[in-house]
Image 1 (cartoon, rainbow, N blue to C red):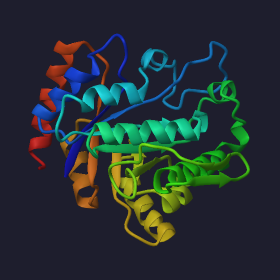
Image 2: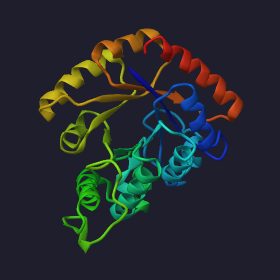
Image 3: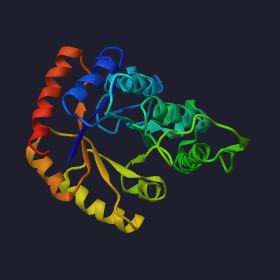
Amino acid sequence: MKFGIATFPTDEGIAPAPLGRALEERGFDSLFVAEHSHIPAERTSPYPGGGDLPRVYYRTLDPFVALTAAATVTERLLVGTGIALVSQRDPIHTAKQMASLDLVSRGRAVFGVGVGWNKEEMRDHGTDPTTRGRLVNERLRAIRELWTEELAEFHGEFVDCGPSFCWPKPLRKPHPPVYVGGGEAAFGRVAEFGDAWLANSLPPDRLGPLMERLRERAGRDVPVTVYAIPSDPEMIEGYVRLGVERLLFHLPTEPERGTYARLDEFAGLAAAFR
């Protein structure tokens, strides 16, 4: 079992570089960071977690900048978006940013992707929420072309790019692993693009049947990483029985001292299952 950390890096918490060093020192294999470009003041989209939108959503750093800072001070730590909101991202810029992160990290980048829930945020990027699923799929196809073809082009419903050169190419071949976030509605996306499924906080009793349905849909075994698990040994044991590849503890956004104490707690728990 592999253990990593998922968090919202902000201007009010530990900086990405010392966080990356602390994770590697404690044996964690990965760091996944969230993305929100901005939060519109007028919002009707309900927060999926219920209640008020947490403060970290308003202040999260750009994920590629944060992950680059962590990558440059570590040797083994995987650095991943958890998740990049592809529905709000230009695919050409995103292809270059992700390939650059993979190069800077020497092949340790993971492209966690998703559709997103904040419709007002999407609209500010020119995205129609009603077609965001098709948009994300097409952008992922275009990004893959830009990564893998020396002379790339793409012509679709949303993306239209003539023959173009786009470097750097990712260090990892054929491209950085794509971890697809979302629930069962995203299984088609996982089947087409996913090197892994990034499942969001599902307990083992709910996750097991979904993993079976995903295998049927994809026609293959798909590795599973579970995002934001609780510090519960019984639940971790349940994930172990299911054969989950990786568990991500949710790290609250705090200054360094509080962060190190929480990481020590998580590391002690993870050590019992390695």
